[in-house]
Amino acid sequence: MLTIENHLTKEMSDYVEDCLIGLPFYYQDATSDFSELGDFQKNLRNVIETPYFVNMLGCHNHGTSADDVKYFVPIIKKLEENTGRPFLKRIQRIKANLYLKREDYPDNCYQIPHVDMWNHEHGVADAGEIFLYYVDDSDGDTFFFNERFGSPEYTIMKRSTPKKGKGILFDNSMVHASSPPRANERRMTLNFVFAK
Image (cartoon, rainbow, N blue to C red; front, side, top):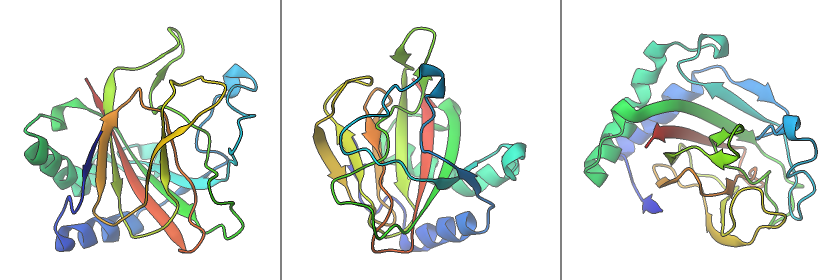
């Protein structure tokens, strides 16, 4: 796992935030959908799922086009610069997430632990990497866990508080979960999925 503080300049971070605010978002009941697996991952301790809003960038059905993705390419180019590794040609998905304030959300709780790309046929996480970019300063930590996906219980390895311009690069097999803000009005992230 690699955490990059101030991934973009302040000017570029402001630009990304303005671009994201201008896009449509769509309501989702839950952050992860494993309904085809029955009660899988639904009765875990400390899990409280909440609705949120999403935009699958570059997807016409979600109100954006491939042209909209260009606003977020600088994030990927900066990631290449910071790591010395190629990412742009490996992009599989860019997803924008918007969580709204939940003052009543308990501390130390989180949404359903998950991996971003799961191979249902083989029961394993797809080979890949995730870059989580925080669009704004907020609360609502991201939780990273020690266990593999599908565990009956999870222990926290690390928590990351949203800070505008911060990015975290990690392997797709790393189980993680979001939480909504309790103090701030919103929490916005961009989630980049790259093939290995």
